[in-house]
Amino acid sequence: MAERTVGLIGYGHTGQALANKLRVFTTNILVYDKYKTGFGDEVIKEVSLEQLQQKADVVSFHIPLNDETRMYYDVAFYSAMSKPHILINSARGDVADTKVILSGLKSGQITGACLDVLEEEKSIDKILKQPDNIVQELLTYNVILTPHIAGYSYRAIEKMSAELLAQLHDIL
Image 1 (spheres, rainbow, N blue to C red):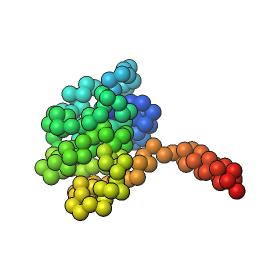
Image 2 (cartoon, one colour):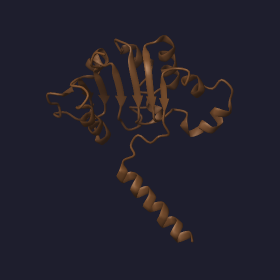
Image 3 (spheres, rainbow, N blue to C red):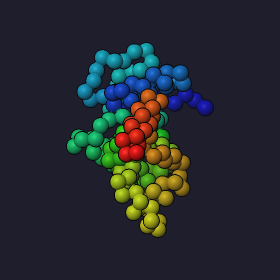
Image 4 (cartoon, one colour):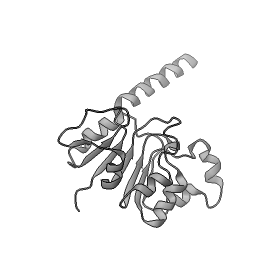
C-alpha cells in the first residue's frame, strides 16, 4: 500500500501529539491551523486548507468547538476534497455534520471514518432507540465509533480514578 498523506486540522496539544506519533509511520503530514504558524519541519508541513484538501488521504480534526468551527466538515468542505479520504473526528461532535459523513460514505468519497465524537452524542440514547437511526446506518460502512475517549492519556485516567476514589471516600 502506498504511503498515505495525513492532513491534520488544528495543531494544539492533541494535533501536535498525533503528528509526533505519526512521524513513525509517514513522512507526509500536512497541518492546517488558522491561528498557529511557524511549526513546520521536514516531516510536518504547514499548508493552507486548500492544499490539505487537495492532497490528504486522511483528514483528522483537532479543533475546539465554537461558532467558527461548528459544522466545519460540511458539504462545502466535503466537496472541496479532491480525492476519496478517511475522516477522523476526535475534536467535538458538532465539528462534523453526520449527514454529510453518511452521504460521503454512501458515495465512496469517504472511504472510512473514525469518530470519537458525534453530533448526536447528547441525545444518543434516544437516537439508538429509534429504528433505522443514523448511528446504526453509519456502522454499515467502514466506521469505527469510540465513546469520546480519544484525548484520554494514562495520566488523565489516573487523575479521574483518584478523583473518583476521593469522592467515594467523602461519601462513605
